[in-house]
Amino acid sequence: MFEIKDFPEFSWSYSRHKTWTECVRKYGYEYYFAHNGWLYDAPASAQYAYRLKKLVNLPILFGEAVHDVIEHSIQQYVRKGNLPHAEDLEQRVRTRLRTAFLDSRDRGDEWYYKPNGYTMLFDMYYEGELPEQGVKEIHDRLRTCLQNFLHSKSFLELTSNLNIKVMEPEKFRSMEINGVKVYSVMDMIYYDSENDRWIIVDWKTGRYSSDHMGQLAVYALYLMTKWNIPIEKVAVRNEYLLTGSCHTYHLTSIDIQAMIDQMTMSVQAMKQYQQDKERNKPVPLEQFQPTSHTFRCQRCNYKEMCLDSSVSRSLPYEYA
Image 1: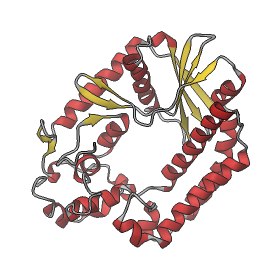
Image 2 (image 1 turned 135 degrees about the vertical axis):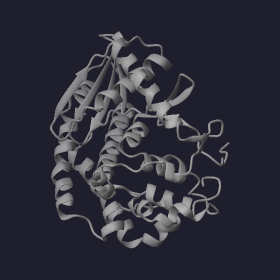
Image 3 (image 1 turned 60 degrees about the vertical axis):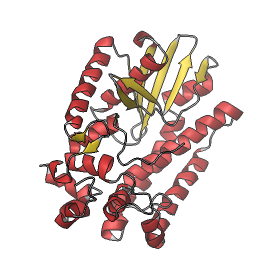
Image 4 (image 1 turned 30 degrees about the horizontal axis):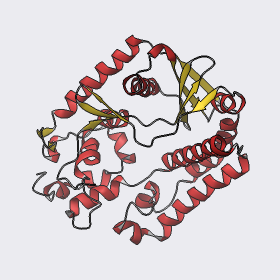
């Protein structure tokens, strides 16, 4: 049964770690001060932070839409043997993007009171319109990404190799490392019985980034921890749909230990902002330092709240 708590549960994920390294103030808003903001009787400041948390920028929305149609396509193939058509996939993504635009343009009042029921695009909220160049980039990427998915190494292996078994996706995967719950949500896992190898696939709609390896190492750690699979039998793979490139890695126990060490240091740093460690009550907002890289602020969901000093003074007493 869902239980309403004054403070969120402390956990760790690679996305949480990335938010922390980007801006500690943003981390505070994201993981503490927006907590319970979905409740109708929550303090106005928590509702405000939660509303901003739900803003979606166009590249992220595009990535989510592409991931969703890929997941649906794989499920349909595994269950019914149906191969997807590029035109159908493209139409599904365009419909998702169009709905988000209409929500942002025409349903702002509904979104204001129910942010999790509608979509509000970042640029529509702050600028009142979408950037022309950004829309063009998404348009140009759409067909390319979907075509590259259909011709990707992972999808071709899935549809041509009878020894491949796709594991049923679980939306929320978690494990416990050193007493901390760690979340790890993977795009696809399949087992190649012919080669006795597990392959973890992460679809990327953007460009290569060096931190993708850390994310893959967390995924591999999940298989090792929860399913007791030796690292020698695990391959991790990034499919870059924008370029059509595929990078497959075979990690070692040294790579995994390096990931655990990074996680441990990250957790220790985050816990310095707990006023009450048992309840995960945070220190006051002003102790969450904003980034010194102020160029990041322009694309931050919380920029209007962060720049309004009166907001921090109106935070509910349990956070102040």
